[in-house]
Image (cartoon, rainbow, N blue to C red):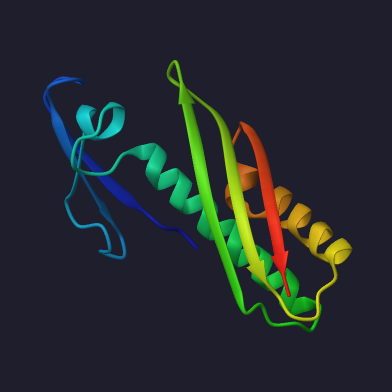
Length: 137
């Protein structure tokens, strides 16, 4: 399987502007710029997209792991924060709130650790990865 996205940029790094389009079309000429990346401008940015990818990948991996235990997650909600410092992504932190009836805390913690280490985006990232998790029955 291969997936793709296209970035188009016009102008200098600070004054220029660009847009992103994904293979699925969910992003279609979506705006990004210096302002949307380093200030509070309108549009997306690479770090926000990496955060979405990591949250989505981790959450889906955890769902597969829980399902393999014969349980069905009622709700898995993950928020990912990507930290960019001095031009380098220094960390990815996921905060997970889970509702999984019938799953004990020890098994939950083991499954979270597995998803943290083994989702494909975690494997891709060359940075510190951490997860804070809460299990609700």
